[in-house]
Image 1 (spheres, rainbow, N blue to C red):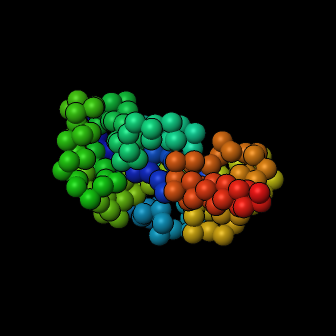
Image 2: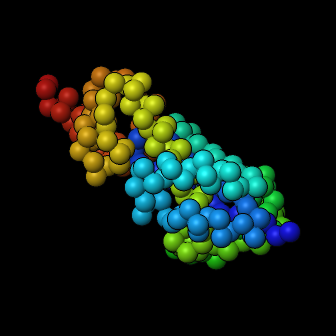
Length: 217
């Protein structure tokens, strides 16, 4: 029986919180079940729809892996490798763990061929890989993986909000609430572990804060 795997992420560009990468493996014959429950790229679904599908997707799965990469771990890894390679290493872990016959991978870089070669070089997988930009829009198993990743990240974000006692919105730099939280953390020197300090958004705010401090002299 042929097994197929979908791999996708959520929170890649966020300035706050983790990046989550999910791999969902199903028997190919069960792909219609994902279509029946209406899976599509997580960004095209409402939060209610994603939550509704989350457990249903898990029940259809033959197996799945969900990896959460904290802001702190991302910062540490970015000292030596870029974000595409961080994502690639996590995807390779999923490939090696699930050992599907075929994998549909939503590729983080434009050069899909190079990314596929990189994945193979670090995973040595026998899985046939289909690496495409926008794979989560095209392949139901990849769409389902995107839902697992998105729901998991959203839940982790809500946990962080409760811990810090601050609603920082979606955690991306375009969100005013998120920037307000980053500024608050830098000013109070608290909850810094939830920020991605290697992001230009944070480094620019650090510089701005330092310049203001020097201007006081």
